[in-house]
Image (cartoon, rainbow, N blue to C red; front, side):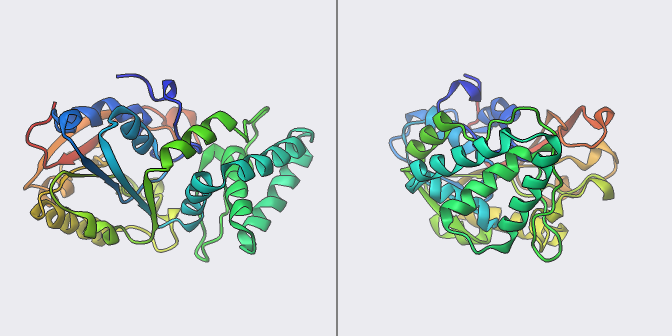
Amino acid sequence: MKRLDTYPARPFVKWVGGKTQLLGDIKKTLPCDLSHRETVTYVEPFVGGGAVLFWILQEYPNITRAIINDINAELICTYRVIKSDVEKLIVELTRIQSEYLALDEAARKSYYLSQREHFNEGNNSEVETAALFIFLNRTCFNGLYRVNSKGKFNVPHGKYSNPRICDEETLRADSAVLQRVEILCGDFAQTGKYAGDNVLYYFDPPYRPLTETSAFTSYAKDGFDDAEQMRLRDFCEQIAAHKSLFVASNSDPQNVDNGDDFFDLLYGMFSIKRVSASRMINSKGNGRGAISEIMISNVANAY
């Protein structure tokens, strides 16, 4: 399997929990005959940065229809602009990039904070929102997306010497792929109407935190707690009853507590396997390393 960065289309933002490094493991969980099926519909209810989306639509050209969804309205706005107005977006990003890179470190921080405030005001066109979203992602600390209780983006400035704010080639390649994608914004459950035979779902929800300090439930202001994890399990049962196949990723609580079998019990009726992943988002360098994640599926004829 080719690395994601060898494909023309790839994620246009950095994203916490992005699945680029796990694409090989995800492929091993997919149906072994996926490339031979005449028509396949792909549904991703938590699209995030889109690593799996861009990979799978290029790896499997027989996926004739795709539906993506996310609760993050600004992220979904950006997907829609890339699909329909990519050239206008490139013009706006080029302007921002030129202004930002011409500044010294102190002035860059001030520029970042002013653009963050502008973004949070919300009175922007869709193209402006998308451009600010990408700019903040490329210049904030560690590429995080975090909001406060009022839903305002609050990640501090990151110190990058030469960030690539406008990646024209990737944006145009992504736009081409997105022409066959229907883009939704809202709760994951709204994608249930697409369930049926020859429909494949991939779920990458906000992960259940391993520790209190590792929680990233502030991705959306309403969070994603254990009750939401159980609601997602019920949804997986629902689409499986409609003959859809699914693969779902999540954290492995047994990294910190061998007795924590939350997911093993929750998804006991499905296949669960553990794969190795690197923890990339941590304020301390020595907190980054290999851990296991779980992969849940109802695919009987996997690779």
